[in-house]
Image 1 (cartoon, one colour):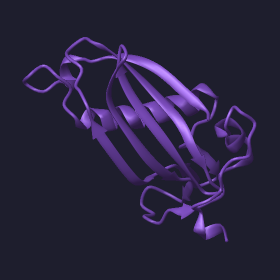
Image 2: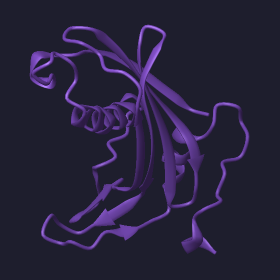
Image 3: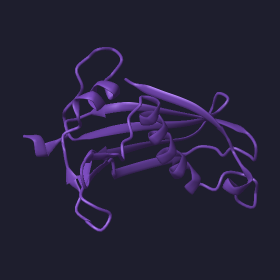
Image 4: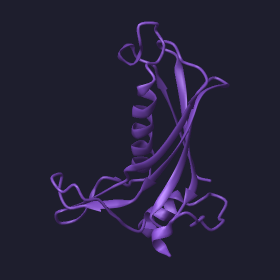
Length: 153
């Protein structure tokens, strides 16, 4: 599976009064991390794909489990793995570690979509472009799993 990893330091504005991470920040870190994963490969997942049309990868399903909490100024490792790559959707697994200690993990399913403008509330699921599929494909060379994309059948 494709994996992206980076580190960050827990900042004052990300803590609750007890000096530990305020849990919604994990979700913000997930969004930031997915953007970083794509941008590291030279791909803007929210770019214009045609005049007046943009792409995006909204979350359609999310589950998370909390096991620990980092404290102010501790370094957190955020690992993102591509668990499933379908035709129009992908599932990512997130792990947050402080040293060897697993703090939290989450699974999210995102759909590749296009939309015409910010005022257009309609997202249109679309096939994940080939160059992006190649970037997300498992490093093992195995073909991607396309199960779970019912709209393709």
